[in-house]
Length: 423
Ligand SMILES: [Zn+2]
Image 1 (tube, helix red, strand yellow):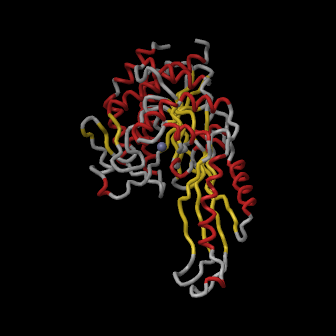
Image 2 (cartoon, rainbow, N blue to C red):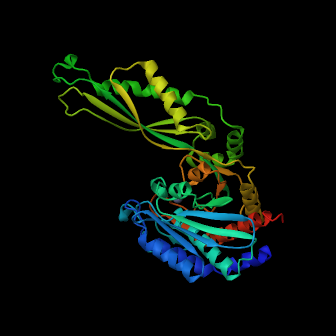
Image 3 (cartoon, helix red, strand yellow):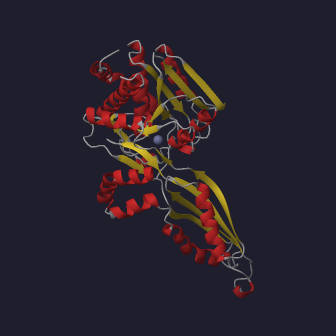
């Protein structure tokens, strides 16, 4: 066994390695799409091999590679880190202050696509694995690093596939998305629905001969707001997370000058966004089709099925001829009871490391791979600094924060694995 301070000191001493590894990972362009992970997976596999850490490689679809590296120790528990290797495309180069794939360090920040989301966190988990291995695995349990290829497009062939094949065997998972100085335990679900209305075309000079689908679908859309008035009965654990996450939303509300009540309301309700609308063929023809693409974000505790049938009922009541609906996708919501040991251990580590005196749950509207782990019944928590600019130009992550995140993972591993032996 090792003292916690010794382990933290060993991680801190790897500052240069942490930074260089993050730079190396950022310089490998892993945009998804197209999602070709061969270069970065080869590199990461080599890193683990060189460190003497066993690593499994899975490639259910060519180029979509997952790695599971395992630092074995004596003890009943396994704690895993889950990180996605893919990044969203950097987009137009002219919108960046720096080359998105140069991984330059300017004013103590590492710049580049993927620096915040989430290669710095991956580097933290990889270096921790190496430190633990070199120390002869001084913790009473197992530390796993799970790297996946396709979180940004839903995780179908990465985390979801690994879970279905029972390849992530762990008692808890740290997911390396951003939670700032806090921790993430909830995300809303997202149901994509296409509404299609069929009418009848006619000459624009005699619109009364036709049935204008654009006009009728447009008239229906405001009625969809009725979904937002739905007051679902949410589990007590979800209500507790919403309550605890209030400071997070207060911060957002201040930044964006939006009433905090709107944020809090949105967590317990289904929100409607009509993102796309198209229809018709020509100006001088009565439109015979119209399509609206909706994104319905629904709270944890509900299922996409419940939201779909609620919408179906609403549309049936309106009895609109020629209207059909189709579900395009359903990304289920996620929540983790804050009483779970991995969450409590994370809160303690955030406090002990002076990262935050009073950590709260971060509750975001966007989704991540936690939902796949939830399906397998594996508790998970989002941990790690946010950095800035994830999914937009000029993404960056503080060098100091890379080191701090590595220490955070070390502290959580120390406590969580030790608790497994009753320590
Ligand atoms: Zn991410």
